[in-house]
Image: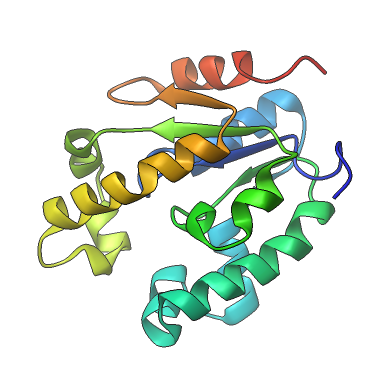
Length: 172
């Protein structure tokens, strides 16, 4: 991918970190389109991402994510919110390297307070705290590595988070 092609901003972070909420606000402020990669996966495969992981297994699911991301990145020049696990898929960090990526960081206690998170992600059952703790431990180093900036979201108003995300963007 040639530098300058693809999304103007890519948001990464765990489920419930606010990628879709902040992504829509950022797209509106920047006057560009917004795309949620989980929606792209569902449109492509006819099922929600969590169901696809169960159906195909993690390894095949990540291959499908990579294949779709290769097609989506050059087509979209707005804001892209990736699925929580997408940056962990083999080859994805390299795809993200030329793009501006912001990691929306959130701690375990704040994640557990997010309404509807467990219902949206049934794989968190029967012990959401243990699953989320493990997920954050495994993924945080990857999110940090692929991101140009990290924005803390714990207990913050979306507009305040948006300001920090926009302030972290390179001058265009």
